[in-house]
Image 1 (cartoon, rainbow, N blue to C red):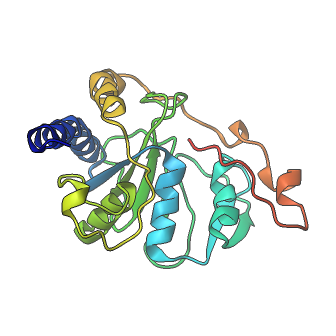
Image 2 (image 1 turned 120 degrees about the horizontal axis):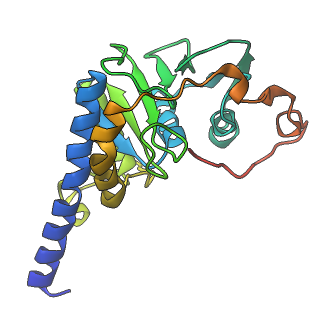
Length: 224
């Protein structure tokens, strides 16, 4: 690639991802969190938080979205079911920093300090972008590590060829187009009352055949 063309390409790439940074800041401010890391799906956000802390299990309510318990099989960790009539969010671990599945949460200043909170912008959610999510946290070091995990182990502000990448990444980044859509729809979402989800919006997953097979399975992971 010609040097000038290459330089122009990376400049445009960095400029396009500016929308993602602006959207992250807007979401963080709304929820009252110091940091926000955009992802392509809420479930992938939970996965990255589990990977970051090297957890050996996840604890999941029997009624939730199916991709969350699927993570146990994907990550080869233990799955614990529990009966819980949760509202807006629930915790998936009892050790280390709490990870909350907050896929349906839309409330100003609702961030819980000292935690990872994973949001969803899937098409059924209040801020409906078709796909996408966000991880809220208050730890700068963790936010940087999560950002690197999202972007194939690299920092997004620097062309990856110029980095000596030292950790694995998972290609879970939010596209600039999704971020821009979020910015375009954000103010209207703030003015609109969100749907109040109830526990019966989800079936009892623990009774499904896929979770009651004796042999190992690798179901197709549908992310939110």
